[in-house]
Length: 270
Image 1: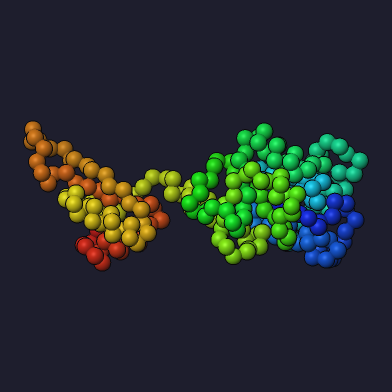
Image 2 (image 1 turned 45 degrees about the horizontal axis):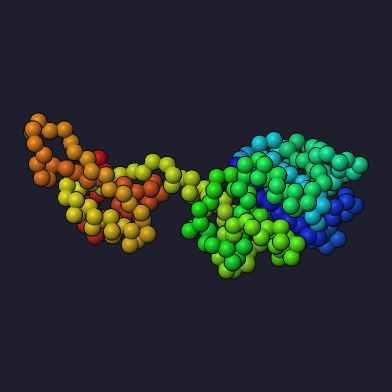
């Protein structure tokens, strides 16, 4: 599961705000609503393997669980109404309660949220401009990405998150919702790359295969070489009978074949 933890510094902890002024009197709840949309929405569907945890002023936690979530619509006003309803359900409650399907509300602080994530087996990670580059970082399974709202992490936030690894999407400050979209894109690509490689060409000389592999990598396309010895009636191995297959990621196949065709020969894919 992917989790996104949003730290909201100005959003109200009581349901007495108006839906007609989300950027103003509602404490920039519009930022949270856009982040929720970025975390969950696909075209005509929701990401069911996602959870969004919102911490309001280090006092109230609202959890949105994708596999149970209903009534979530793309517009900010209706999402803010779900948050408002969750806060109404919290009044007088000490334990976590479900306000609508897939939305849970409780009283919790940031250190308590971090502890809960560890107990669930999640791996908290802070998204920060000064972190390690995302592409070079080793993102653990079941990550929980911590992001701030329209404000930077507060000194109290920094203290609570000090021991967590940090990864960066670049030095340019981005909106919270933009960061979530980029993280989804990068992790989706990573998941695709973990699938089976496909053959883009085969040659009968290992030295030539290494030249092609180096060329593809110069163009930013990782490639693997697989040596394949076809069946033979000969009792010995004869030089030249061993074919070498050049394997790439599915998303790189078309570009790899174009490069091989431009620099060497039309690719063989059978």
